[in-house]
Length: 453
Ligand SMILES: [Ca+2]
Ligand SMILES: [Ca+2]
Ligand SMILES: [Ca+2]
Ligand SMILES: [Ca+2]
Image (cartoon, rainbow, N blue to C red; front, side, top):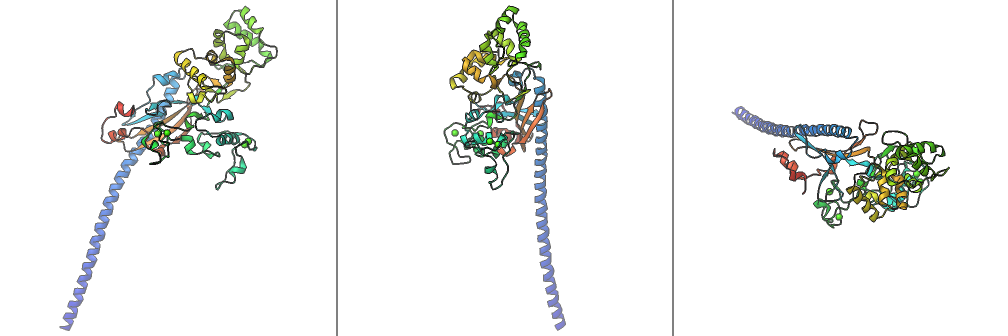
C-alpha cells in the first residue's frame, strides 16, 4: 500500500514532469514555427526587394548605354541632345529611368536631359574673382579652393594649407594639386554640404515642402518660397578641350612673329589678296595679343571676316585649354562669373543667343559686348562642349527599388567614356512619389507625374 502510494506519488510526479516537458516542447515548436514563418516571409520580401534592386542596377547600366549611344550619334550636333532626344520615363524591361537635371530657371518644374559641363565654372582653372561670384560662395572657401589646388604652401588671405588640415581631428594634407571630382571640395576649409547644395537637399532642383518650412523639418531653410541652391550646379572639374580648330587642325598662334605667312594664307582663303594685305598691315612685327577678341578689334577685321577665322586662331601656346565656358550653353549665374561682366551684359548675351543661330564661333560675343569687355572674356570662352554629366534615376518595374547615379561622360577622342560614377541613392527619391505608387499598383506613369507638380 505504501509502496503503491509511493508508486502513485512517483508516477504522478513523472506525469507532471512529462506534461511540463510536453508543454515546453509545444511552446518551443510553436515558437520555431512562428520564427520560421516570419523569417520565410522576411526572406520572401527581401528577395523580392533584392530582385527589384538588381533590376534597378540593370536599368542604370541600360541608361549608360543609351546616353553613350546618343552622345556618339549627336557628336556633331549637340543641340539635338537638347531638342530631339527624350530623357524622361524611358523604359528598360519593365522598369524606367529618367535623366534629371535641375531647372535653374523654375524651381517648381522638373527638367530632364544631359548637363553640359562646359557650361560651368571649372574649379581647377577659375580665378579667385570668378569663384567669388558663384552663388553661395564665401570668401573663405574661394581662397581655400585656390590654396587646395595651388602647388605652394603659402596661405592666401582667408585660405588654408597643411597647417590647417593637419590640425583637424582626422588630419590630412592639403592636396596642392588639381581637383579630380567636385565632391572633393567638401575636404576644403570652409566647405559644407549646406554651401554646396543650399536648400536643395535632395538635389532635384525643385523646392520641396521640407525645403520651404523653416526649421520645422530638415533642412533649415529661409521659407521664402524660393529654392536657394548652392554652387553645386555651377561648377565642374571636367571641362577641357584641345587647342585645335573644329576639324582638329593646329590653330594659328597669333603672338608668334613667324606665323605671319600662315596668318596671311588663312586670310586669303577668306578675303581677296588686297584685303588680306590691308589687314596684315595692322598686325605688328612682334604681336602680343591678349586674346583672339583683342586681335579682332586691333586688326580691323569685319565681323563677317572674323566669324570665318575665329576658330582657327589662338593666343595660347598650350595644347589643351581647361575650363573654358561655353557661351552658347552656360547659365546666367555662370556667365556672371566671367571677368568684367555685369548683369546687363549677361542679359544681352542671353537674349542674343536665343534669337540667333550664327553661334558657331565665339565671334558673336563681340557683336554684343563692347571692346573692353569682349577682350576681357576672350580667353575664358568657347562654343564647344565635350563633357556631359547625367543624373540617372532608375526605378524597378514594380516600384519596389530605386537607384540614382551621377555619371560624367567625356566625348574627347570619339567614343564617349565614363569618367565619373557615383551613387546618389542616399539623397532619396527625387521625382513625384505618385510615380512609385503607380508602379506599385501596376498602373501606368502619366505625363502629369513627370511634368509640373
Ligand atoms: Ca597649396
Ligand atoms: Ca597657396
Ligand atoms: Ca529639392
Ligand atoms: Ca529659400
